[in-house]
Length: 114
Image (cartoon, rainbow, N blue to C red; front, side, top):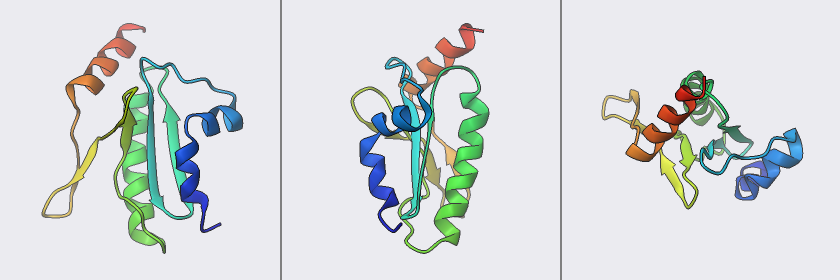
């Protein structure tokens, strides 16, 4: 559907409805909307978020570049009150991650849980 991207507005309830996973509010979730046909998310629970973030960044950039109805090439993190953009495109076109102090604290907390 050309309206799939609008489902991003329903997160995290959409994720819970489709997967049964509940959001740990102190960790949040990752989300991207590469094009009008795709909404991608990951509920942060453990250290797997590190590899997920890398894969999600690549998937999102490809979905943005390859599909009709491009929305955004970026991955965002819900920090409990708003979304923070984690990816950025350099002038040469390469994708980089920009980890904020808040997201760094989440990464530190989940790697300590191991």
